[in-house]
Length: 168
Ligand code: ACO
Image 1 (cartoon, rainbow, N blue to C red):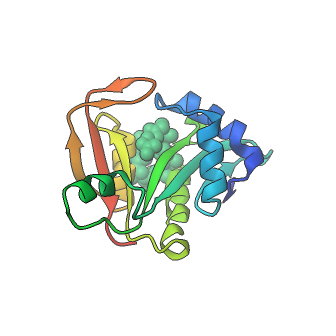
Image 2: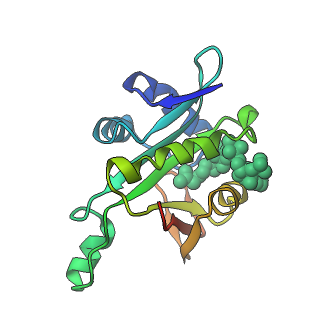
């Protein structure tokens, strides 16, 4: 098993893994945009035959374009610093509990050195105990807020937790 930076030719396999593992799915345009815009912070895990068995896809929220800052500007509040956001991470079922997701997440923290990100955020369903354990117990993330309702493109979920790692 090895982990390396995601390349454009991995995108179909990444999308397939995403479809298999999560109800939040994205168009190929979305995957390409992220891989092209922030190529150093998305990673894949591959088996000995080069098959993609896990991925993490991350992006950078610039000061000007982040959702929070649109709200902050309207309310004259302090702008959020540049930060990273993990859009999606998953590992194929038969490759879980091998430490792959933890390694993928830690590698994506390169956003701190490359893009000077101050912290990393992500959204996770409240019901997703495995992912929450990964973020909180294994990686030291903290819960920032819990949203009562969340409408993802594919499936509406009752509750969503936003977690963040404050010190990258
Ligand atoms: N139950 C409890 N704790 C868990 C679990 C679990 N099922 N899975 C991981 N953890 C915690 C443990 O502390 C574990 O350490 P340990 O094995 O020494 O006890 C630690 O996280 C590291 O686990 P990894 O082996 O690195 O995690 P894995 O490679 O199995 O992947 C993941 C975890 C990504 C959540 C996987 O279960 C998965 O793909 N799930 C479906 C997709 C998903 O839910 N993705 C996250 C959605 S949120 C988002 O994408 C932003």
